[in-house]
Figure 1 (tube, rainbow, N blue to C red):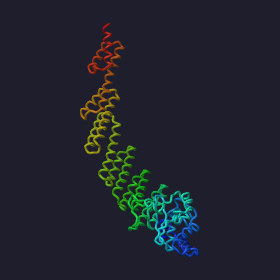
Figure 2 (figure 1 turned 90 degrees about the horizontal axis):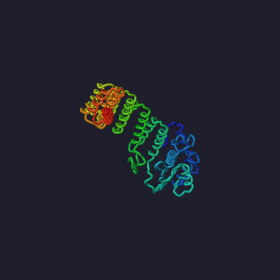
Figure 3 (figure 1 turned 60 degrees about the vertical axis):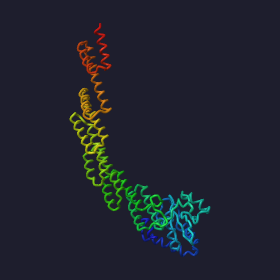
Figure 4 (figure 1 turned 120 degrees about the horizontal axis):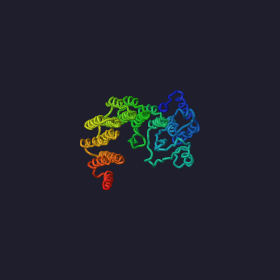
Length: 440
């Protein structure tokens, strides 16, 4: 157990193993060591605090560090207590609560709680000294045996595996996700072979997770750290290798989707559509057909939107409309989005005529497009705008000639305008001006 605990601590230096051996020897050769099981178990706890443990440190989970500076937390002190008890012939198990760990000593048919972070933690239920110190020292609350739903018994190997869990958490708190992965692998190896306690349930809902779940979380967390650093290509290369060793098709597919999607999205933001397409196709084998289509639709949409934004002529606009229709037919654009892009492209193309104030050409283009693709509120509004501008041009031409006193030409222009726009208020107002002038 001592050697396994040092392996879990990340330091198998023979000198550290010798320190544990020396501590075991000193304990068992102590003249004060009682002979009865209960008294012996309590003595071992007091002995630890008097001779080895110095100060509580929430994240100090390593066994080797205890012998370096005396700092400990609930896991490291519990593992050390288990080792010392085993050497003295006392059987123990671990207990975990939501954020805490301690020991059960099995003595003469009794199961006795031992809170190893406190020198008064042996059978702590009614010990005032323990309760006065424990919460203030650790920040945890003691969970008594009758609260069986809030605590779970684990075996000795599982207790040691918590050293790995704490080290994994420490690395991930410091964003050292790469260092957490081998620790999760080692923990899985440690717990391999059905070493879970017979008296504990290890479904995903319990406090003690299946080690493969913990390992997979670490793998995904490391991959996610690469994605956050915009290292998608590296993440995909790593994930391909990892997925060959640790299979979970659903979770890896989710990761592949995220990695390829993120890289394609970044290409799109950089307006590198060709590179995005090459990258997507190069990684298509990693994706399900559905996930590939999801990204391909995003890329197609972005490509068409970007190109539509820079339409400069009717020919370019018509070519874009043909591309949209083709993408819709091939399933690369959903029907609703294709309709939106068709409308946008028609409006953008019409605006190339409007840029030269050729309102009639713009209106005619929209009218032809409505005949081809059907009407919409947006296209009808564009038609109204362009036709209003045509009517405004009639008014402006009328006003210019009228102000130059070219009354006949002004009236001719007005009549032409009214023939096309008989209900236009501005032109009708102009007609009143002409009528008043003619009646004089």
